[in-house]
Image (cartoon, rainbow, N blue to C red; front, side):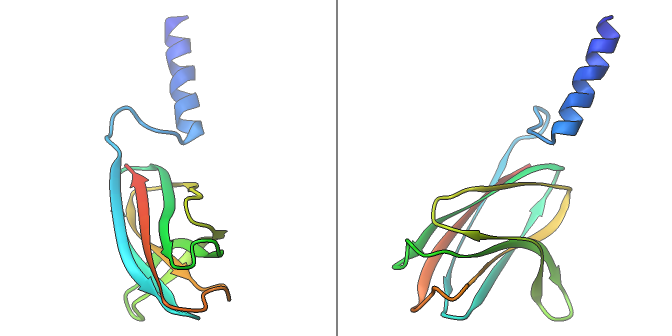
Length: 127
C-alpha cells in the first residue's frame, strides 16, 4: 500500500509540471529599451524542467498599454528569437508555462501601442 501511494504521488508530481523540491528556483532579470514597432529579446538557460514564470515589472513611461511577450529559441543564423509561445501582456501580469531544460529567449514586441521609446524590466523565475 505504501509503495502504491508513493508511486501515485510521484506520478501526480510529474503530471502536474509544478515545482520540484529537488532544485532551487533561479531568477533572471533583464532590462532594456523597446522602440515603437520594435522587438527586443534576451537569452537565458533553464537547468531543469519545470515552471517558467515571466513578469514584465517595468514598461515606462507607457505602463498601461499592452505589448507582445514571447518565449522561444534563438536562431543563431539570423540572431532572432523564434517565438514558440506568445501572448499579449501588461505590466505586473505574470505568465506561467512549463518548459524543459535548455536555452531559451524571452521577447517583447510592440503590438501597435508603443508610441515612444520605453524602458522595461523582465523578471523570470525557473529551475
